[in-house]
Image 1 (tube, one colour):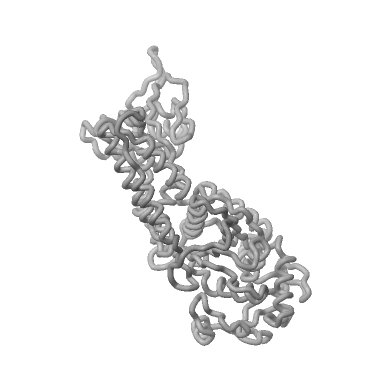
Image 2 (cartoon, helix red, strand yellow):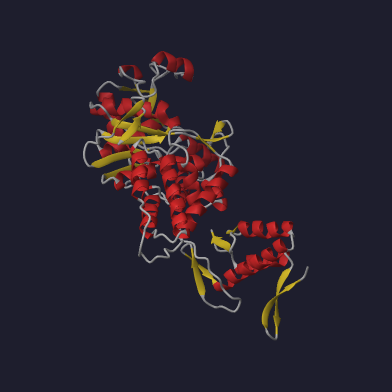
Length: 504
């Protein structure tokens, strides 16, 4: 198994220290809703963690929450909300988004404000060793004390000064020195320390939490490529200086960034699509396929067209796993071993999820062909489901193409959700109306019915034999009644029962 190590700039064999992989991924600063850029990073590392577990490793996964930061303080002032309340609100929102995307929680998710004692201990250790100094109530790290500073980002001190526009306050010894402890300012949260009231700098938080929960050397440290410099560069410098041990991290893994047009998607630029907004239009499986269809180190360009294509891909897989093997396990059967082997080979090559997905779609196509030829495929389907769910984290709900009469009082299950019979009856009636319109070549009205149903979470796909119904969400009876009213179809009680009447 090979992974691309940013520190070396090449792939190398993955050889963790023990059978328990120690993995740290930089978490969120919770001052607003998480966006698709966050989704990309956390889907990527969720899949990496899942694959390591699939390969038989144990994984100890730590992901921090930066709940004290300049951005949080600024947003707190703008909103008139306390930093603590703001952080708690958006941390809860983040966990909701991750659950909706089927991203597993880290084993440990420490908050910076709950690790102040550890942070102070490490800063004091750096001061004692001469790597840090106090000035003006703050504490700074001496960058020039580290001979290999810049090794992760491949920058020299001279180039850093020229490209970053580094400036130093009067208290700094060098413009490139970075802050470990910030002196208190009016109306900001603060904690007591040997250097006076203040709060931690951003970079030291991650070093403190990684050192505390995973030890002096970890196997994998992950995050977006925008964190390589200065954040991860500074993490290396302060962690290795404090512990005296190298390397701090054996394998640095960085995901590419989501782009909207020519720029990266970010909160600071304001050009973002939140996860909640994306989930209003697309399934979690579609968003995961959208992310995993690009190699994790490559940039990912957002567009509705690409996400719609991912949605169609998800629906293809849903339909395949919803098919029943007509042979009952008797006779010739499809062999899925080559597809499983291909999946593992490409995932072993730096987590090549685009090729892994391709192998699953190839297997899905073979399952469909086997079904049409009455060749057994149950075992092959189980392979598909196992790899897609356990490794790629797809939910793969089973679709039930259910029919219900208007008078029916039972419930029907679709995609793991209970669908009331009266809801399904209304949907079926709208499908009948659409079929009628298509026969009469009233294409505009037929398309209108389909698009309106899609807005309510019900997608239709036409085959030669039938129209398949996929419930992405369950519409209410009231919303369907409003749609039918809009289309000129109304419910009316008659001596023979309730029937639909056309008003136009």
